[in-house]
Length: 235
Image (cartoon, rainbow, N blue to C red; front, side, top):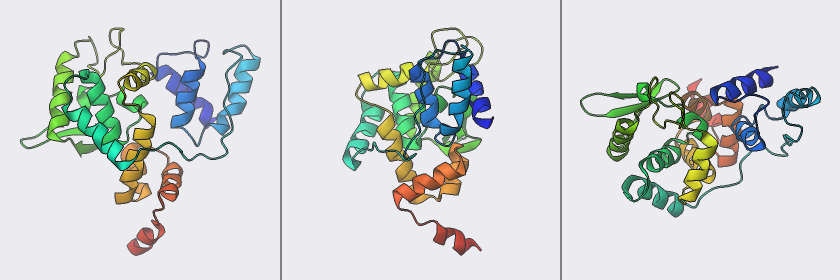
């Protein structure tokens, strides 16, 4: 039931319905919810049997819920430098790709960001993620300010507005755009997540990024981080 509710809520956030969903949409949801993908299979079968969604949709049971695509350190660094400095890239591409690489944010989360997630004081600009403020590097802060100035949609002022008034950018289309400009998101986000787990325990990452604690634990296992010692030291 939890998987079905989460899936339906996600569809609503993407302005989709069961009848309109396509396989790339389902793949995006499943990749962001590794703990729910297997549990969602019965609901998908039920929906298919009742002709509530396309009959060819599939969710595969994952032999492993750990990612396998990563970047080399120099590749990750070079791409981030390109995001922050290459003025030949579209502004929205620079912003989205930098957020993936700096904060391991999924595209589904990035497209939901609005001007309300940005705050400032006399010294810094902050991005609120899951109600936690992250200090933005000055170059990225300036890019985000420029992007918001170009966001002229009515209603909620999205960082990455979509084509329809008052709606955000479609994450699938954004993923295609990033790939087109040589800045694919998947491996970059995986690498950024691994870097974060090198510095912070998984329970902190789960809280900061709003992912399930068990998902963060699996990432920590993949990263080889022995955080059990960290937990023991707090007792």
